Image 1 (cartoon, rainbow over the protein chains, first blue to last red):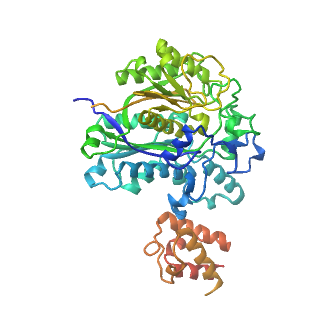
Image 2 (image 1 turned 180 degrees about the horizontal axis):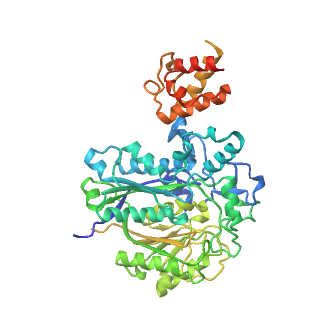
Length: 422
Length: 77
C-alpha cells in the first residue's frame, strides 16, 4: 500500500495576542508582545507577576469573548484549559468545514487534543475548598472538568466524531506530539480525519509558583514585561508563561482533495526522542533535539539542506543556545541559508499548547512565504550561523518548515511541514 | 411564592441556565430543564449549602421536580 499522505485542512487558535488564527498571525508578524502584568489572580505573593494572558473582551479587535464559544452554564463545569481547547477546536472544525458529517464519515473522524498539566487550577481550588468545607462539597463536575482527555471528549460529543479519541500528555511537547501522533493514525488507516492539538491554562498562583520553584520563569522584567521573553538574547532570564490553545484538522490527502478542501500544507515528517538525562534540563550537547530532528527528516525523506524555516522551541531560557547549536550541527553549511525564529518571544510559552500553536505558525509561514520575527533579540548570546529573524519578520522562500518542541522529562518532538506537491 | 421557593428557583436558574418561567411546580430537572444526572447531584449540593441542611442520597433521588425540592427543603429546614 502506498503511504497515506496527511494534509492540514483547518486551523484554530486562541492565544495571548488574540482569539483567532489570522488575528494572532497579524500581530505576530507586526512584532507585538502579549506579555503584561498578571490580572487573572492576585500575583503579589509569587516571584513572577507578569505573563502572557489571553485578552478577554467582547470579541471585538481580536479579544476573546468566552460567551461566544461556550455557554456560561457549561463553562462553570470545566477548567479554562478545556474552554480554550474547545474554542480552538471549534474554529478549526468550522475552518475545515467538517462540522456536520454522516455516520460513516463520523466513524472515521477522531480527536487528539492534549494538555501539559490539564486542570491544575481546578485541582488547587478544590483542594482548598475541601480544607474549608469538607469533601462532601466537591462538585460532580470537578473530575470531568479537570481531566486532560476531556477536550477530546467534549469535541467528540459536540460534533459526533466517533473515531479514535485520545489525548497526549508530554509537557511542553504535547501539541507537537498530538499533531504527529494523530497524523500517524491517519497514515496507518485508523482514521481519515483527526482534530489535533494542545491547550493550557496554567497562569494561576499554583502554576506560577511551581515554575518559579523550578527556576524556569523570567523574574527580572516586572517593570517592562513586553521585553521579558527574549530568546537567544544575552539578557534572557527565563520563559514567560502563556496560555491558550492551537488545534488543527488533519486529513488524508485524497480524502481532502475529493471534497475540495482548502489545504494549508502537508505533514511531511515527524520525529520523536527521549533525552534520558534530567527531569527539567536538556543535555548540554542537545542530542535529544538533534535526534528528533534527524528522525523527522528521515521520515519525510528529506535532507537537512531542504529545510528553509525552523520554528524553534526557543523558550528564552539558558537552553536556547543548546537547541541553536543542535540545529546548526544538523544543517551544517546549509545553516547560512536557513531562518530560525522563536514566536515565544511574542506569545510566551504556552506549554502543552506551544507545539500546536507553533505548527500553525509554521504552516502560515509556508502559506505567506514569511518567517515570523524573534522579538526582543538585541544582543545574541552567541553569533548564530543562521538568521534568527531578529525583531523583524523575514520575507523569504519557504518550501519546508520544521517545528521543534521539547518538554520536561526529556521528551522531544519535531514536525516537518511543507507545501502540498501533487 | 414562599421564600424557600424563591431561593430554590434562583439556584435552579443559575445552575441549569434556564429561563425563570420554565421553572414551574411540576418541572422535572431532567425531562424539562435539561439537567443530566451530574447536574442533579450538583443541584442537591447547592440546596444543602444554601439551606444548611443535609439531604441523604435516598432522599436526593426522590427529588425529581422543582416542586419536590421545595417541599423537601421546606420540611427539612
